[in-house]
Image (cartoon, rainbow over all chains, first blue to last red):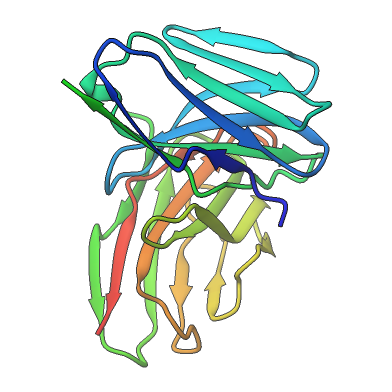
Length: 111
Length: 112
């Protein structure tokens, strides 16, 4: 399978703590995207990192990409209860236009 | 408001019936996608289209059909040939194939 694989599958933390989610993939990529999904809803795009970038920030989000290890990580700093959701990484192989989604990491942030 | 809409939100059908899920976008996006999501799982690509009147099969196209007669619309038909159609269906669109995708709210299909 070419899909992104997230680790851990589930994560439970206290409000204010940082949350780190990891993603591994198998093929060369054009870019890698992270999405959030609240229960029963559609996905929301969080951040896109290109294959020639190593790190990207957006507000409380920090994404890293290591193409030599075919891995990425998403760090959410100072988490809030509203961050409770499932997070998916989606590598984009080549120029296919086809994102490959993993099973996601379910994050619970306790107030 | 620009966005991508799916209707209905919930859909119930009897086994053996075809059903069509609607997806409309007013974002002027070229590419549109249909995904299926099962409980606790990621998204699997059913069909995608990068231009009007053209579409390609994704990873799980069997038992599904689509059309792309207009840029704004990409309806998905779940046919009676789909052996396990009960799932959450998500439609998405993007400017071009390699850009971020914008998702609709989803349609939850239950086949009784």
